[in-house]
Length: 150
Image 1 (cartoon, one colour):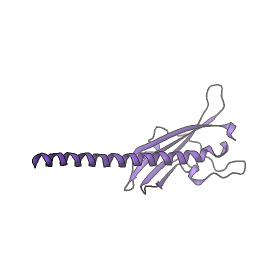
Image 2 (cartoon, rainbow, N blue to C red):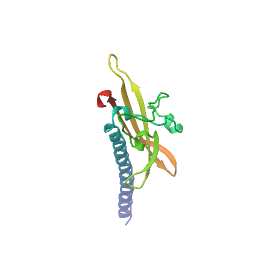
Image 3 (cartoon, rainbow, N blue to C red):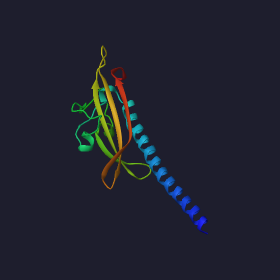
Image 4 (cartoon, rainbow, N blue to C red):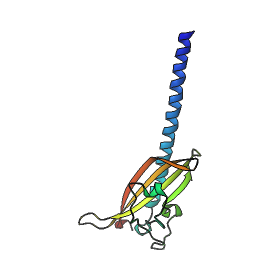
């Protein structure tokens, strides 16, 4: 009986650990999907429409390594296009398909390689949000955009 109790106890510990790992993997997968969706809005936009309406946020936003005081900001783009609001918002809290809250932070900076033309580097960072508190980074994705996209 004692041996059987110990064996069952060990099995329950393995199941509990597996359940926790699957939950974490699910959150990471959702975060990567949200980062992909956000980045896709920039991939379909003209170069002139890649900007943020405001580059301010809380300490979690400004404390990220992708943050720069010289974020690309703007208010309109040409030719007669209007980017999606989600594309121009620096920080937004969204609900994932798993009904959890995630914070999607977007950073846009201009970089110019030696002998090249200006590029816009877009970085999307997705955080977990628990009870309104911004948590750890679950996903980070970056891409550069060239003026030839116009």
